[in-house]
Image (cartoon, rainbow, N blue to C red; front, top):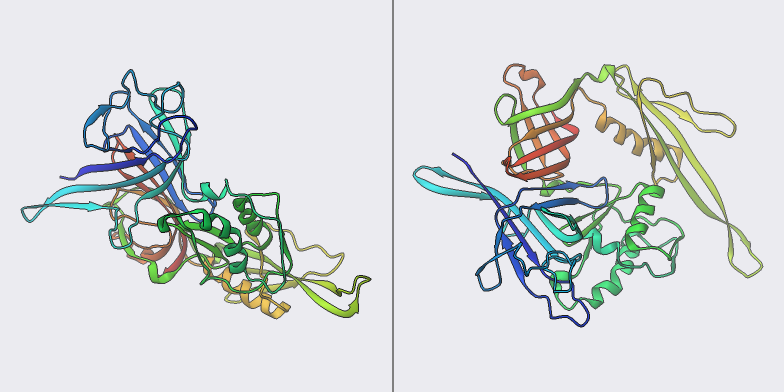
Length: 410
């Protein structure tokens, strides 16, 4: 028998001017429900925790105190020092206790080697109703509070240069190493051209990089990752899920690639010096736009190509999916075709697409690989990359909603 374990830790961080220091660490292992996400699609991983009315928590001395006692200010809605506040640290882990071979096993999401948790972040909002609900966000919440300095980056500055510069002042203000942010740029090193920032937050800059260049950004612990390549394969763990066993339900569809129509509009802008100077002595530049439409359909191994020219529209997109991608490293149409074809073929396969629901173990993260096994129809077995995971726990047990990205192996 598996017994659910949920551990939630809140570390008071936000201070109120003129009030007593808030420095308590609050731990509780029982809640109505909680949910959170692990994904690269939304910049921020977020969630919510619902705390029941009659709940005791351990204070920093290990003593049980009523969370909803008459003298306890929960979320800053009275004159006493609040127990929970926007900006407080939140850590969530879950797991199961069960007996195997005569001894008790505790399988948890916490990894002591890498010091990673199911969720680590900050309270972004506390409600005033009961039961108390508070919203949580990962480290991207911090970047929503940090203003980007007004600065113009040159065409030779890389994405890594930009991100390190944007985080420089914040990291200087942190006295503890564990609070500093690092940048992982193993996924992208090419310059973007002239890029201006200012009058926006760091998070808004990341959103603009996504919109303009399709660079996805997300946090892995305290490490900010950004670039055109999302997954780091060396980190991926492999998990097996079997229909009619540890797959509770699914919203998966199995499609043959012969029935798919996939296309991508690939583009890039190239700034080149003309050899002439402006009135103030700066080099004049001209901008050339490269753009091409590639389409895979009818089971073809190579895409059809439609090069964009002035005054000519692309063929209409009927019965298929069309993506728009910018490739800053491409210097010619041929390079665009190579890069975009690789992206298209990743999603042009015979296999499953969609989501499925499973239990809390095997614990799965975005970027892991999942082997789907169908004993009744083994020809549908395959290994897939995980695009996102939604976690939920509480009275109803532990659940993971796992979304597939693309097929790796059949």
